[in-house]
Image (cartoon, rainbow, N blue to C red; front, top):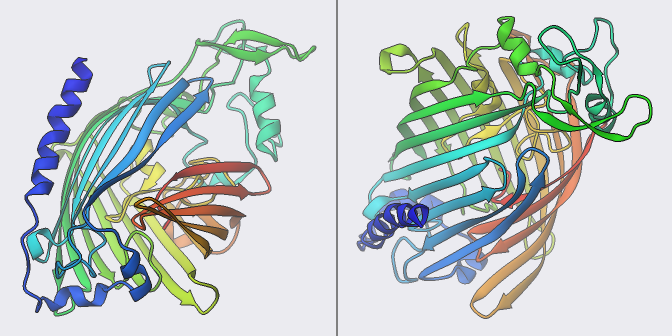
Length: 469
């Protein structure tokens, strides 16, 4: 009950703020004009306020059974509003909430206000409180490009070429090493638990007559804590019979790397970050573009001088392009390429696991936002590049009451690699994945996706809200 009251205390003021935003603007505001939607999409754009979302059901040996909801509330305004054809929405509130039978929890709220009250300013506010015991860790250097390896593997072990064989090996009971029980399993050897409280504030200003250039500044403060699973009883396999047994977990890979000085940040603490970015944006409809491009140079800086426990500087550059093809009712060729680097000798391990972007952070390299045939964070190092190509083909439009659904498919190809130094980034040791996905455009602004990614190591199924890029 108390939890519900707290949620209402946060959400209701946000609703009130969004509800009072919409002042009519003069039709001569040319800085919006380059963002006009296509006539076909504009005709289908829904007026007023509406909700989209989907339930989130999952089950995991660590997190247990979970139920949640991921949803969006949109304020689109009226069709006679001068901004209607040029903005993705007047305001959007995104809310994710999930509860699991383990200690896993999530509450995240995000408010986005483009062209606030008809001005050149855009404001974003993100709040998050979560505990996730199912994060993955495979290492922090370009050695992760090699085969999968157990943390207890002796030197010279060839590793595992598929995730299935690796998973079976890590669950198999082995003799314990120094500091471990007599017989242990590595079933949770590449998992860790993260507890996060975060507040992020960003402001974006459009430049020039057509508003295509943007500068952004932001500030993020978060408190992080981490734990690994040494000694935790887990499901395992008998090394001779293959029977299901229970065994304590051995020393995790992250704990070993931390103890040996190869990884920093396991102690967590307060992180204070100043964010800056320069962007060039000509997309016609931000949530699901059919034409235009988006280019950005984004930077995050953290140091004790601004109240942070750690010092690092992260630079990320990406470009996205969209082109509508004269095939069918709505066929779009979409592509992205990005590259990033982390500066700072003792940057914490968790900063290797995402590339920050004002348009939405990217978990790289591996997972549903980068290499969809590999597990999240499968390849990590200080420097990386990656690329994605999708062919988004609309197959049908369905109208159910006031809800409009566009059904489509999206075959895709992903590529990328990591390096310990940005000077060594090249095309060598590139990892690739491919597959196809289902896309459901719900009232245009909400895109539901289901992607099946395939690589030489794994086959994975992802689903969620929003285009991958």
